[in-house]
Length: 200
Ligand code: IMP
Image (cartoon, rainbow, N blue to C red):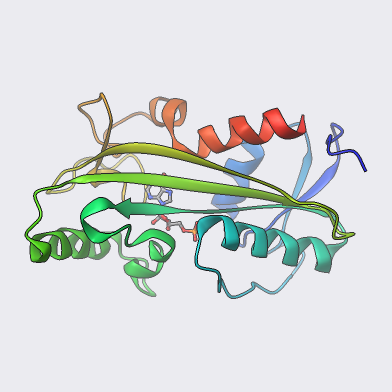
């Protein structure tokens, strides 16, 4: 089996979030026909693995097996050095069922203060996995961007933990940066660069 993906191929994006599917489609440069797991009514698997890579693989494998299509999935999050890597794979869950990231960012600030650590370093990770329906070898890559956390949060341009994250060598938070400026250096873009090198 070749691991090259032909242009125009139909690929299922293992997400029920149309925003994420759009982002995945944009990063794949309109090269493939993207359908979402949500639009195919595929059930969402529980994210039971303990790493970003493990959860991305689990989601892609699940969608490939159920749809019979090649599947792509991502798993991402913020890791804080002073919190031994938390929230990490639990980044979305720290925002609770209402997806309240103001609350999640406050929780990060309070937890760091509780440790007494002065270390404000953190990093975003994005793992991307591509799986084939016949269970053939999967491709999985990881991208990372390092930075420093600032409180209170600044900016309303991004999403999630963007307003507290200043990437290395910059002054603005991801929440204050234009989308294109963030995309130029983001963990997700870096993961995609690796995926493209492996597959296209
Ligand atoms: P996932 O859907 O399980 O991958 O959840 C990832 C979570 O990590 C998101 O809900 C965000 O809270 C956080 N996250 C991942 N990437 C970013 C980013 O680029 N900016 C801000 N937060 C992010």
